Length: 159
Image (cartoon, rainbow, N blue to C red):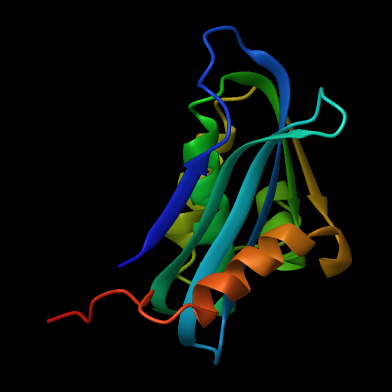
């Protein structure tokens, strides 16, 4: 399985004020071959500094599972760069509304992913969740499509 996780800056000792995550997940078919894409940025610079980039296939999954997997991967990468606040930007309204507590998590397959995301988010003093249009999430969307379009990036089949 090809996994791309690149760090654009060295991990810090002193916490930053904030980090911004742009995450996206997608599946071709629902379920179908799925991938995740995300960037972790430091918004205190102009332009924002990209600290980590994630782009990889995750096997066969639904769009919603891929959305959660993308956010979790980004939150795990963000742990390398301590911050007081995390700002999550995603084009999945379901993901954002569930994490805000506005929608219930009805699908049992999403519950462990939701729980993991909540644990990771709880490590921050402040959490800002925002649903954004796809046009404002183009980098993460492009990372998903790049992973899906790259030959040989599929995970090994389960035996």
